[in-house]
Amino acid sequence: MRITRIFYSHHSHKFVFWHYVQLLFTACCLLFLCKFDLMKVSGFTFVRNGVKYDYPIVEAIKSILSVCDEFIVAVGNSDDDTLGLIKFIGSPKIKIIETIWDDTLREGGRVLAVETDKAYHAISPDSDWAFYIQADEVFHEDDLPKIKEAMLKYKDDKRVQGLVFNHINFYGTFDYYADSRKWNKKEVRVIRNDKSISSWKDAMSFRQEGKKLKVKFVDALIYHYGWVKSPLAQQKKRESFNKLWHDDEFVKKNIEAPEFDYSKIDSLATFHGSHPSVMHERIARQNWKFEFDKSKAMKTSLRLRILNYIYQKTGIHIGEFKNYIRI
Image (cartoon, rainbow, N blue to C red; front, side):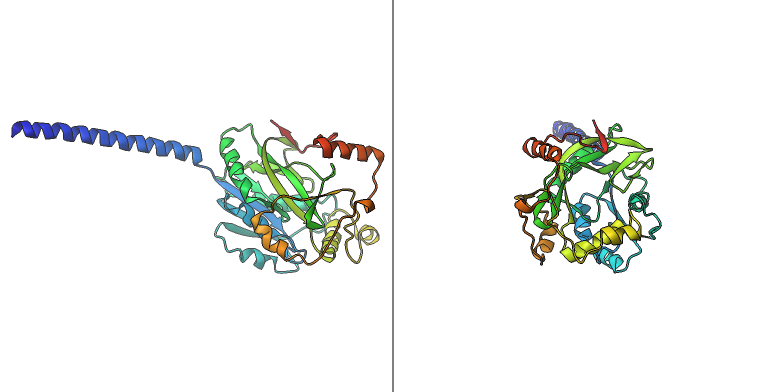
């Protein structure tokens, strides 16, 4: 009997020992995974008159909402129910700040950077990354895993101040994109939560105290739909937008027209890829037609034609201006 008790006691202690070893190992694994995956991402954007000018702002927000822990939307004083449009998304992640645009800032589109910074400065102080998206930009759901992977990979590498992505500009309809060198560029859309960083010029990029950001390239695509609206809506948006750069006299003389003429473009290519799923409903609602006639395309100088030919055939962008330093 005593031998039996000793036997069971021995094996019981052995079982308890290995049980605690297993628990300790599991705890260490969880701590390691938490340390690796502990990351907070804040999305941010701004918008004004999103309904009036038919911005795909809802699609823009929804396209990256799943990789964000919060999403700041700076809604400017509008002539429509843009505020209601954003509220209707109904996500608890979304935090709205209402802003008043300074309409006296009519040089270089500076007000766009001011509004961008308002949204950026409203993100949580404990966020690691800030994911910026403009009201007419959308990301494809297939690219989100690689974007999140890059944010995790470089989270603790403080040399990396942001992530830069490829950019495609759709034009006229959802079937065409502008393929000349002046339209194609890469853009920084993920930046560190570092308030020494600010929006630059007309919100085209970011700078840290005037210096270009050091970034890593991620092979993901920004789908830009700013040039895809009905000709009437596009013209109204263009007239309003140009007032951020020019005075009323310039706009009246050079911009105003009954509707926008999409034929004034030098080069377009047919898009054969897939659009982000959040855009499918909007694409199905398209109620205008545009067919690009290459024979009637705008003529450019011989120098530009040569540069465009080289770019379109090789992807080499001679003389490209970069808003970043790639590391």
